[in-house]
Length: 242
Image (cartoon, rainbow, N blue to C red):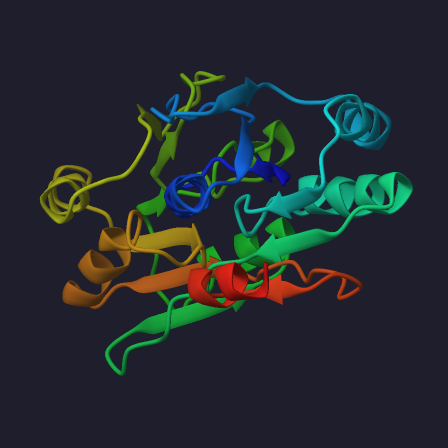
């Protein structure tokens, strides 16, 4: 059986390796600025061109199963996968790793929009002045609304896109060790973390460091997936289903 696995995360690579061990014919797909995986299968790098392009690819490659194992916040890709599978009349499965669970010592603040985040960061309730952003690229609109009294530290996979006062950029791609995260929090005098509840182990150390320092963590709420196709949170359940 031929499987197209939409990946880009450490979980997706592990899933791919397990499928290969079970004898599946797998094509692993990545998009964006991630490290090229070392896999013993075909790797498709780059996008497909939306729903139309993905549908054409599925049919051209005679794919039997489509597995979306992309980042939990890659909602557009997940939507395209669902629609392309429907148009190709093949099963589509979503693997979404579980979110992190809140520890009793965590100070987590959920937010749903950039506007809400800006308001929260300026609130006297949290006394934030040097937030550390690990949510990917920040729009010019968001940065223009920045509190001028705040010092931003932003970590992204690409180099800085703007030169702004009181904004420091770190170009880096995870995973990040606990020691690395502790050093960043220390070097940049971080007093708050802005992140996504991505789940998984590879990017969890920053959450632990925030906990150790009793700092507020502002977490972007996860997008919800449509439930017309099965959603799995554990690899064993997915493998058993297939």
